[in-house]
Length: 170
Image (tube, rainbow, N blue to C red):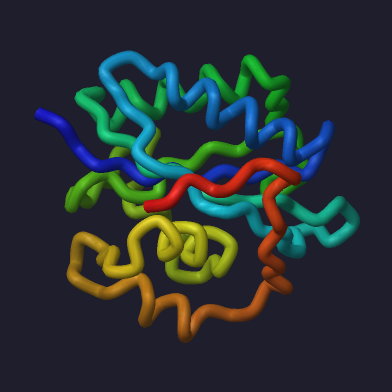
């Protein structure tokens, strides 16, 4: 069975735009999965400690036959391959890949919570998801567009794609 999965991407170290581009290339090569679309990238202030660079964030839409935990393992392997080191909660990082939505499933497991616990509070995650699919809803039926309207502003700024490239349409 194929499931629509939405992955949040973030980076604020070691050339964040290149980190996200490399992650998207890796996501496009995942087994039993297909990259459907990628969102535009956004710059935002960090959540948590403010003594770190701004983040660049985006999202991708995958169709996958992987289970949620198998997909999580693949995401963490991509993070590790790109030098992710977990030193500080909400600290700077080369790459952060979060499984934000997995079909209409709600998952509460020791290693994985879907939808992501903080999704409703993060404009830098909600806006890229809405760029991919403006009618997305949480498994409980709440529209992401309504959550985005109530979400606190985190200084979100849409970044223009590099010359000659355009974001993949949804």
